[in-house]
Length: 345
Image (cartoon, rainbow, N blue to C red; front, side, top):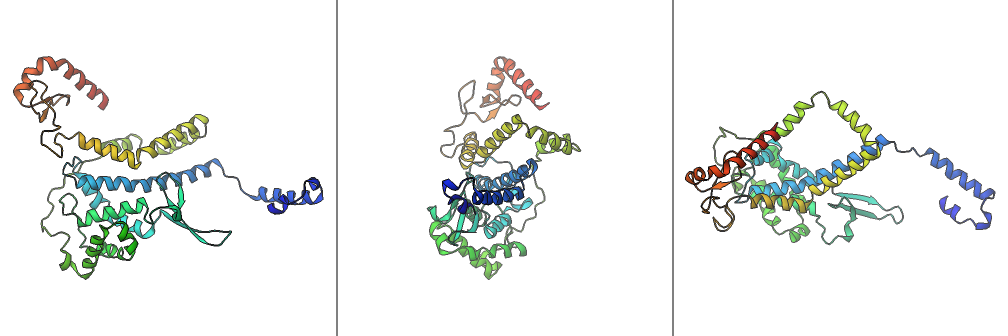
């Protein structure tokens, strides 16, 4: 109908046939429901939730990488939360099977099947235009599975001898085709591991081969999350109502756009690389020479391994240097310590 309206000659505009087609289009437009503000927010919430879930894969890969690093400075409970509390291996296996980064649609004009792949920028690109058939998100998931399952490391000990875990891992074999093995050669070892796992536990070794029982599990409690939940208990509905009123204003829309941009950049691959590289650089011992980047004693200049217990700013090689330097450091230490206490309050 739109095509027919466009084919009408210019001289016929305003005549009976033109009004006939124009009236039909007006009725069709009136039947299309308009999207309310609440529906628009729900649609944006689904998009943001999907983007956060996809970008969380990059965060998981960085956590696994640094858990295997020699200069690991992550808290003790990170690896346990990944593999035991959240069982991230099963989650990654489900992502491989469902492939949420890949969408198939049929072109209405030619009837051909088109595949679109999700990109970190939030765009969906045709798979034909991509250089590699394996997307960045899928590649990261395969690398994570390879590192966890084949890593002989105490921090990433995963018990795959359990029945449901073993069955889930074996379903990955059908996804390891030759094209993926050519792009990611390390997956050859992963496929060999899965083939041995299918033959029985004796070929691969039991998942908990040490035979030791975890008598003591040290885990950090997320104090910030707990304090926020405790502070706003029974107030979430009121906060949501206030937020909805604020987001409908012009100021609220601009603030939400800025916040969405900042969060999107925060979980980008480039930002995560910089974040974890800074964590490694802050460690006193580097990956090369033992004292190559180690801090120096503020009093004598020797390599230092101890800090002031109050302000945590000045480094000392031994207690004698700290005692001799204390008259000069006292005022600054009191100021920094009091500032830290005020921030905690």
